Length: 306
Image (cartoon, rainbow, N blue to C red):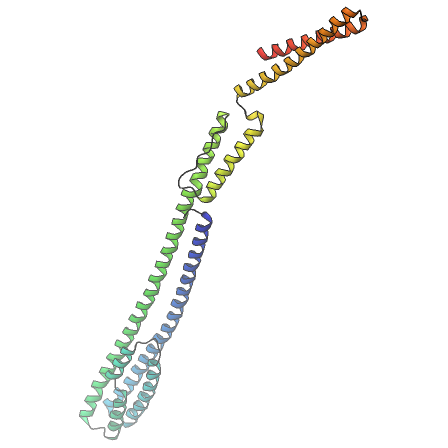
């Protein structure tokens, strides 16, 4: 890209777009973390509630207390409603919902606890309920680990995207700085060196542009060359010594020729006055003119050869 203006526009636009995407990624990551924190808190609350209910159910099973068993059955109903509402969150993958619902049957536990409350001496039912409670505890803990792992993976994905975007921004900035140095700073430094060298030599030389110069630097060099050439053409002080000497000699010769003409015409008039016996006053004036002309011509010739 030859033009610094286009390069600046592309860099600004690209950086603005990448920064916008980076900000959006950060916002989505923060929103996702808040949602997952809510799910984790609900999951932890559900596990704590289940542990409390299990203690109550275990106490009822050990002492074969119908009241404790009935209370535990009601608490399991509340736990089922609470956990079902948590599973309705769209951030939980469907396969986890289906797998969890298939492995945990809270409704059957509630039915068994109610049946046991009516017949506390049913040992087979007690063993079955204990097995179900152990399985439910295992599934709750596994579900909590799965949710945390899923949350970590998705957040890591957003962090990877943010790192990639930051890398692109840094790469674009570095590329722009390199291009700016190659196409503007380096040619300008070279231009400064050429101008200083030309000024030190006392004679202007045409500034040569680098191949990788930008359009703006090339236009600047062309303008400087044109300006210096015009200044050289219209400023006599920019002439070389030989040029000034030749022009000065031509001027002196031209003035000397003019004086010689004046001297010759004055001499002719003096001779005429002498032949016609014209007054001395006119002859004196003519002789002064001749004398002054000869003196001026001598001074000019002395200055020319001095």
